Image 1 (cartoon, rainbow, N blue to C red):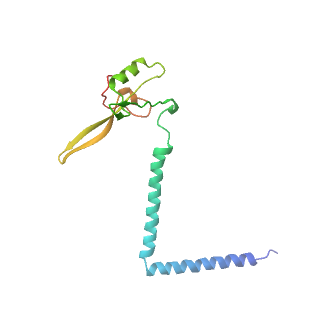
Image 2: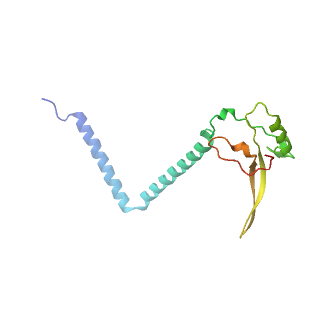
Length: 150
């Protein structure tokens, strides 16, 4: 005949009762001062939301691969034009493009500034212009308005 009970069952019962006693005390405390658990839950929610936001940004910026079919074949050449970093003069780019034999395609980005106006005033904004074919790779979108000869 199997034994019912024993030291293991009694210990489990005592642990369950201690848990239930603590749970009842916590509920009584929450009913007396409802602001404390609400503040705790709100703090945890803000912490989780902040963690998710930081991870999402880091995932998108740092860990995801470039949206190219063969990103290892991408090359970046930086030059300086009239003391502007990462700017290549249109004539230099045109010469590179006409003489390029080792590359399938050559594209260019150039920093630009513009003015955006509306009813409230005008703002100066920084941006980039691209040579049309520089952004024509799969899944990466089309090119922008170009300052370079086509």
